[in-house]
Length: 231
Figure (spheres, rainbow, N blue to C red):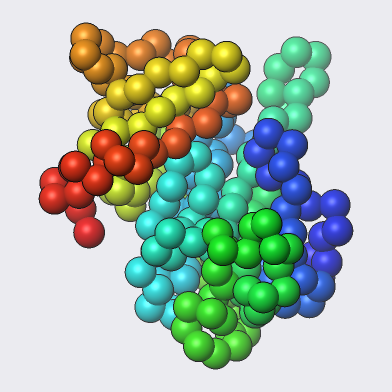
């Protein structure tokens, strides 16, 4: 899309973009995978975007659960996967991806400006959007082919985990009114983080960490683990 005035993200948040400057697209998938693994398809857009901006523009990006591509502490791209159901069963999945490409950071709304970056800001130059879109789609297609061949998102989840610094970090998980602190031990096939709680160090049930969960790093405690985290 050249413009997306009604763009949105997780939990009903809005997605801000500049007309004619960013990459905004959705793909429709009909994956032959268990319904429980469908949420992990959000990882598909994030991993593909990471691969594309790394290969084409040399960006040192990382992935943040559940759907963000980050450069440093700023968000470069976001992904939203929605399941379309029919007769009580998933019919297809729409994976929407928004990448901040040639927008100027100063043009974003003031409340979110400090949390965002763009390919242009990170590289110091404007870049061709069509080439980036083509590469992202190629990266998605290759990984989706593996998902179809395996009938599972297991490889995708492992790749996503390898690109995220969250494993081993202390986080605070919010699910409705429930709040728990713990260490991220990994991610399961549903896209949910497995959390080891303090002080009991028991693993949270995956059902507790569902689609409406927000996982937020605790800055003070996480700082104490910085020396053990991958760069």
